[in-house]
View 1 (cartoon, rainbow, N blue to C red):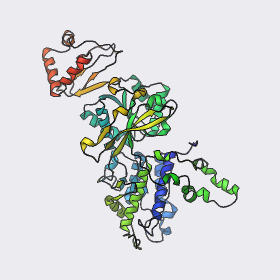
View 2: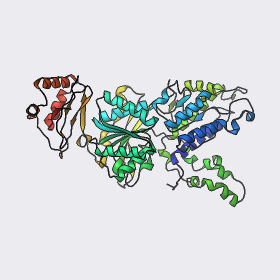
View 3: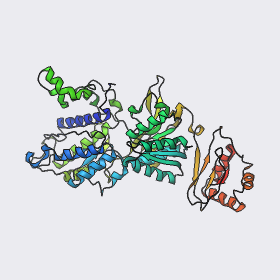
View 4: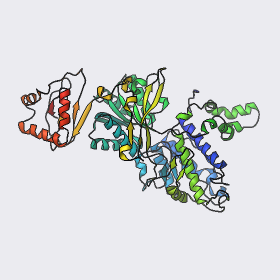
Length: 533
C-alpha cells in the first residue's frame, strides 16, 4: 500500500463510491432519465467543529443562494453523511429545521432513532441497539459471565454500552468494571488502562470508536498488558490501521461484529481509472507541465493512490454509501414522476420535505441483490458478520469470518457462531472454557451469595444487599483451592459465615434461580467457598 500521511483511505473510498454511484445513475436510462445529479464533498476531518463548519458551508455556499437558482428549486435535496454518530447529531440538528434529509452510512447510535429529534435522518445501517444485543448473544453463547467493559465517551460508545449493560444484567452477565474515555482525555485513558491492569476479568467488551481504540491499544502494548480476550464492534474490529508489529499481542484472537462485505461491481476498476479521468480536478488541468505540477501539489498524497485498489474488496462501508445515494435517486425518481421511455416531468418543484416523505416509503433492490428500505425509525435491518483476528502462517493478520447475526431471521436462527474456527486470545486454538472465568448471577431478597475461590490474602466478609451478585469459579491452577466440596459446610460454619437458617435461605435462593444444580456440578469440578459479600 502506498504510504500517505494525510489521507484516511477509508473515507477517501467512501467519497469515491458516492461519485461512482452518482455517475452510474446519471448514465442510467431507467433511473432518473434526462435528470442529472450533482454533488459537493466536504471533509470534516473527524472533528465536531469541522462538521459544524462544513454543514454551514454546505447550506450557505454561494451556489445555494437564491440569486443563483434558475428554476426555483432548492439545489440541496439531501446530504449523505456523517460517518460518526456525534458528528451526525450535529449535522442532523443543524439541518433539521430546514427539513433537509440526511442519510448516514455508518452513524449507528441508538439515540438517532428518536424521530422526535431526528425526523429527517435515515440510515442505511442498523442502529446499535442490535449490535449491543448481538454482543450479549456472543458473550452468553461462549459462557463469558465475568467481564470488563470499556467505551468511548461519545454518543456511539455511551448509548451502545448502556444498552449492552442493561441486556447483560438481564442475562446474568457480571461486569467487573465499566470505564469510558474520549480521544482528547489522556488522564481518563490512563485510568482505563490501570483498571484493566488491576482487574481479574480477562474478557473485555470494547464499545469504542476507532480513534479511541487506537490509543487504547497503544497504551496496552506499551505496558505489555496481554492475554485479554477482546470483544469488538464494527467501528474497529476490521480496521487494518490497527495492525502494527505489537498490536497482535493485544488484539490477537479478538472477536467482534463487522458490517457485511458487499462487492459493488465495477468499483475496483473505477478507483484506478475513470475516477482520475472524470472526477479528479487535478487531471483536468490544462497548460504546461509547470502549471500542472503547481495545481497538483496539494493533491500529492492522493496521487499516490492513483494505481492502488487492493483495499477495495475490504471496504465494508462503501456499499452503505452506495445504497444511500440510490435511495435519494429512487425517491427523486418517484417525486419527478419519471418513466423509462418518457423521462421525468419537467417544471416540478421538489422541496426537501417532500424527499423526506418519499424516503420513508422507498423500496428497491440494488444490483448486488440487496433490498433497501427504511423502518419507522429511519434505520435498516441489522446484519453483521462475526470476525476473528487470526495470524496466518506468513505472520500476516487476517479477519476471518466465524459466524453471523441477522435480525431479519427468526429469533432462534439469528445468531450462528462456529467456535471450532476461532483462535482465542494469545493465539490459542482451545476452547474458551480453558482460559476464562465463569460466573452466574442470582437475585436474592437481601443476601448476596458469592461462590468462588478467594484471591490470595483476602478474608471472607459479610454484608447484606439487594443487588445482583455473581457466582464465580476461577479454574486457574495457580490459585489454590481453599476448600473442597466435603469441607464446604464445615468451613462455612466454623468461620461463622452462615447460620443454619441462612444456609437454608441461600440454598433456596439458588434453587429459585435454577442454579443450584449447576453450582453443585461446579463444586464437583473445582474447590469453592460460599461467603456473604
